[in-house]
Length: 34
Image (tube, rainbow, N blue to C red; front, side, top):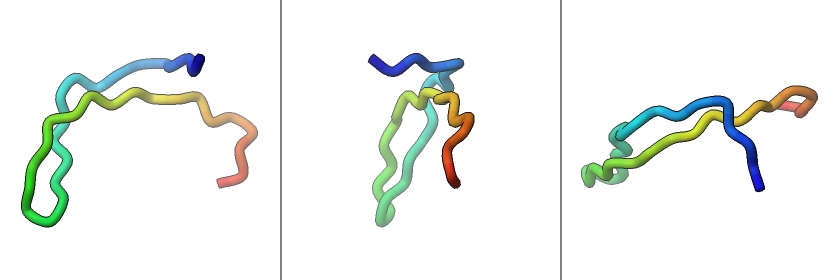
């Protein structure tokens, strides 16, 4: 189970001209090598 800190209701993801409504969730990335 992944715990999220928040979410963004319905954002739009566009791939090759096609738009998709998506729900995005924020994850805590502390300590990760980015």
